[in-house]
Image (cartoon, one colour):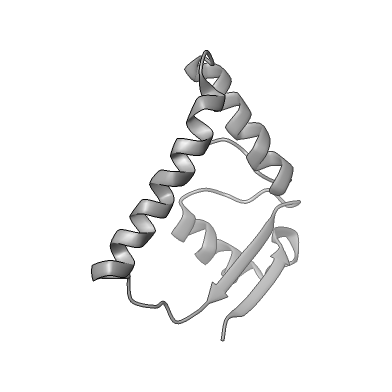
Length: 95
């Protein structure tokens, strides 16, 4: 069962914030939210389940690939960034 903690960076204790910033390799901005989640991972699929997952992923790519025809790499990257920002409002591109 997953456990989840979400805190605004400005509300973290100083020692907790310092430890998390050290782990992530960058300082937080006060208005950022920090999530910590614990869970027990499952084993990766093997055999037929692995092959089926690969086929499903390839089918997905085959359906969306025609929609990218004529789009430049810059347009594709911009659309991806826009989609990520729409579901992750605090998202910032790597600096």
